Image 1 (cartoon, rainbow, N blue to C red):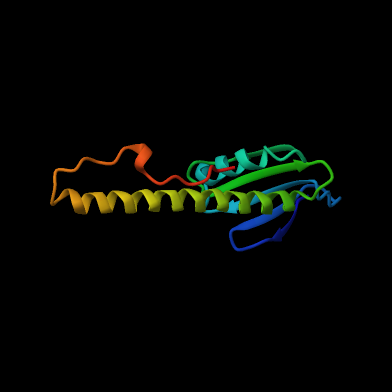
Image 2: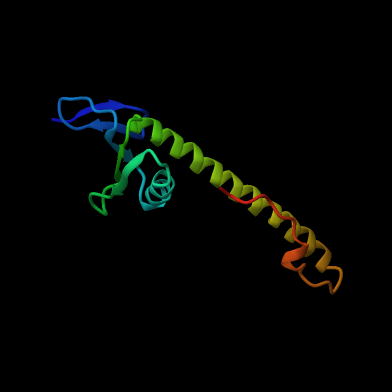
Amino acid sequence: MAKESTLSDKIKMIQQGNNADETCVSFLFKEEDHTLGNALKHIINKYPEVDFCGYNIPHPLDDTMLFHIQTRGRPAVDMLKKGLEDLEFVFDQIQQKFEAKLTVYADWDAEALHSERALPSAQALPSARTLP
């Protein structure tokens, strides 16, 4: 029998069986799909402590995602938290880079209305540090 404990309104932790093995846990995400599942799986699978990480969408018409993590020695919930934090960092970096390029384009577009100047080359655009 599976025990459930709520981590938030959108995530429930499901531990299989009577023994509370913290290293092998499934999580039920509400209102999430492959967009979060695949990105989160990709990040968590890179951690050396993780033996297995995967997800599935039980039915295409359901808005739930089952996310499974099995680790060596560390609680699976810690790996989920770390994965969500790292994914947030990646998304923040993408947003910053996008907004920087958008500003450059908006400046160019405003000037281009009054001149025949061409779009700046990729080398002329500001660069940001590389993502992890």
